[in-house]
Length: 296
Image 1 (cartoon, one colour):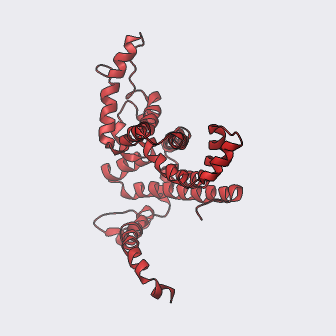
Image 2 (cartoon, helix red, strand yellow):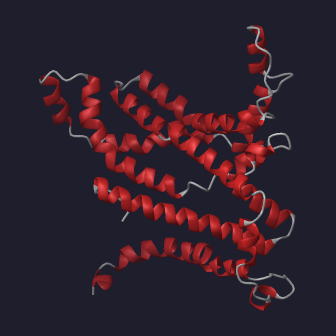
Image 3 (cartoon, one colour):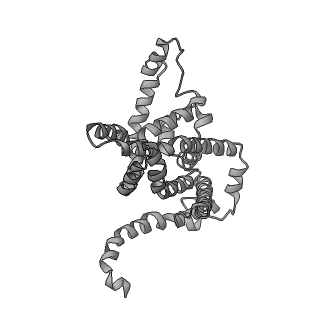
């Protein structure tokens, strides 16, 4: 009866439901090749079962811990540096008066999000080149010898994280700005009368208001802890920085598409997804107990 009375809403929901069903859940039957010796000539169902062979091969490989270390290193670095900045930016923009200054600041911070990842990496190579890079010449002007930022493994994580922060911080703050729009102005008026400063009002009024949003986004970020962005890393990667830049997603790409080890690459991908799902459920449960806010 409820469906019949609200059939228009379900019609609107149908395209999104079919999209996820066809393109996300439908192809998931293919993950069974992680437990098979997949041969294209035999197909997915016709290939022989090998059990946990490829999982054991991955766990026992010499590069297993290097991949885990690099993936977690980049993800945690990005989370520590990149997660608080959109919150701070949103709180700062919210305190600015409406006018040219605020619009200019929003435009400047939002604009990098619309630049292609390929262009971003190209800019990094151009600016950080040890021979022609602007930053290199700037450092040499002050007597600092040019650093090979894009080739040195020690600098890879920093270059990845800082460029990602520059590109995404402004756009990521939009959701916090939307949450701040719902703050009751009477609370600020009452706090102002009581002599509260802007920092005190931001800490005691604005921050608690957007806390549920912060927690939900933090849970989602933790659920993607091992899913480091593939495109940017593969573009920044080169033989010289491979010791720091090789992560699970790039390894799966090489093993599956370049080397044709489809079953092995699928097993690594399944392992990655299971760990992410486990972290997501665990963090969600912890935050629900501590803050009463969660995804479900």
